Amino acid sequence: MSTDPSDLHADVLVIGFGKGGKAVAAKMGQLGKTVVLVEQSDRMYGGTCPNVGCVPTKALVHHANQRRPEDSPQDWYERSVGEVQALTALFRAGNFEGLNGMETVQVLTGRAVFRDSHTVSVGDGAGRLTVRGDIVLLNTGSAPIVPDIPGLKDSKYVLTSTELIETSVLPPRLAIIGGGYLGLEFASIYRRFGSEVTVLETAEDILRREDEDVAAAVKTILLDEGITIATAARVLEVTDGPAGANVVYERDGSKHVIEVDGVLVGAGRRPATSGLNLEAAGVAVTDRGAVQVDKYLRSSQPHILALGDVNGGPQFTYISLDDSRIVLDQLIGEGLRSTEDRVAVPHTLFITPPLATVGLTEREARAAGYRVKITSQPVAEIIAMPRAYVVEETRGMMKFVVDLETDKILGAALLSTDGQEIINTVALAMRHGITASELRNSIYTHPSSTEAFNDVLGVVVRSDT
Image (cartoon, rainbow, N blue to C red; front, top):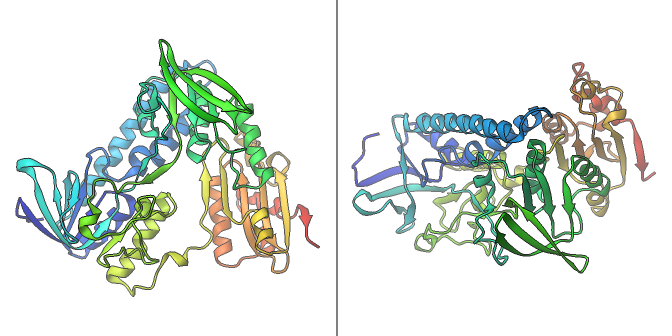
């Protein structure tokens, strides 16, 4: 891409190298449009997923599950982290070359700061560049939230998820503040590596969005793994001692103290808009700092669109990818695709075995006025699912919420081996109106996890008839 070294112009300026932004950049580059993509860190080419999110954490799930009792926890963990970091480095280089190697696309490394609604400066001093874009895409992702707990930010034992997966020293004792998806995934990973793990959750129980039977099944698995879960626990302070951090929390009206070697902050993430100087661009943000967008992902400046976590939507890589489809439809399509088109979007909590969900819970379906039948079965009792025994993972359950009148699937919770895969079949069925009976009576390969539908969808445990 031929450019003036200090003053660049692009048909499309992308700020942030996330999934959605890079997908749009690649497509526009293929069409011969000039594209400048600005990423503040050379450690984040490709975005959160391949560097500090999905790829490394799920790779650690795999490595943790491979450790045998006779393997040294520290040695196994150190080797695993090294292999995972080599993998992320490979992906990072591939992402950079895949875009920067295109004739009309250029990747710049540095912090972008808006000067006006079309222009940003990148970098400082003599190396500072000015980039003007006709279309501007914000794809800066999100950043970990560190709660305002006395001593937390100053403790040398406190880690974000990004920092934890990059350290080669396995914390023998790990406290996790927050029992959401991130906290529970890391609890499962590090317990399997050999850490003593304590999860501190402020809510009355974990996974409160899920039905009680599903949440209870998850909790049983985690407790059986040896994870300590303290719910209704409010962390009061963190202080450093000679041999670790002392985490003080209140529960049931009493104060408790645990000494740990590491404290993981798993309190969620917020949109990364700080430092962009969005005021100069005239871009409105929400109270949480997310870029305000309409259903077409357009900000308060129509030529500035926001993709991924930065727009305040669901924080999943596949949502960012779908954001790219909406944006591309705005740029080169009919401009009709929107966030309202999303139906039956699945989610997965990558514990072992994983919990994959889609649609409404039983509680939500009843609250919405549906008359339902509930089919449910423990994995160990699903005769048509020998794969669970083959891979020696029979824990968990499958549950479906079915509309009594139409036989259509309203929601599902699959706490089972391969749950992260087979939930996609359920979601596809829901999007296309395939009934529970059709899903039950379909032909599946054997032995597979999908054929569990042949059994579980026929086991009605509750019905509104």
